[in-house]
Image (cartoon, rainbow, N blue to C red; front, side):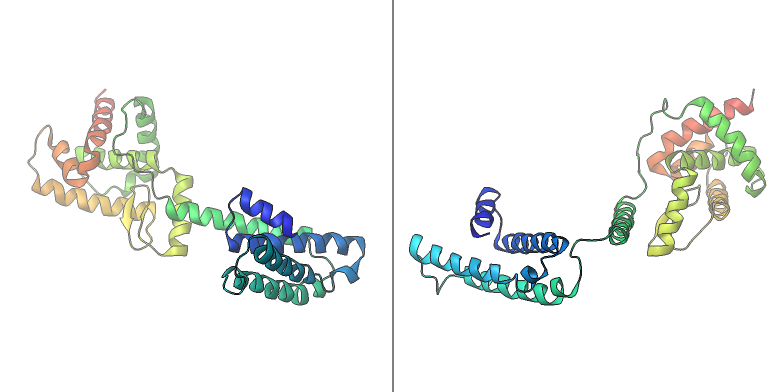
Length: 267
């Protein structure tokens, strides 16, 4: 073990802590194999291997490298390795019939790792904010199809009388759904309920501190668009001013969606 660990330590530039972990790992693997073979007496005091490794390190450092072994900080790591090996030997290896994980243990660990990975992924990956959406990406056909779909599903929820304001709400809805589809919004809802941190929610993609549904989002956007429209000048291009006030960053894309919807409605 002494030669093996030191070879790996030099070849892979392992730190002292990594070397200790590597040594313990070797002890566990060897113990697992011997327990499977039925050699239980061999594992009763397997930590003694680490004691011999400790003595070998002292001899190697003192006689071969001619170092002052009593002043070396490595001795504390080596002594800690022996103590850790003893604890693992007495509290783990000697108290189980098999060191290796069983099928049920592996299944549990795999699912825990998957859940942890998904949590970290969605926690650190917010909505994929694309500041500029190429007009060719959101095709005219997709805009019209989504408009028809959302009009059937949410038409009664849009509490605005003016046709142009309704198209503005549908434009925001289409862009929000394009960037965050229904399946991903369901995941957002779950993460929000677990973390309780502000997050973009609903089909309207509103950054909210409390949980809101698609219907809640539509209601909030309708109120906001209504207030903005009252301050804006009426006219043929008033929608551009409204979009600029509502979402300056994405107003160009919203203008494009609105214009395609307006063309379709005027056919």
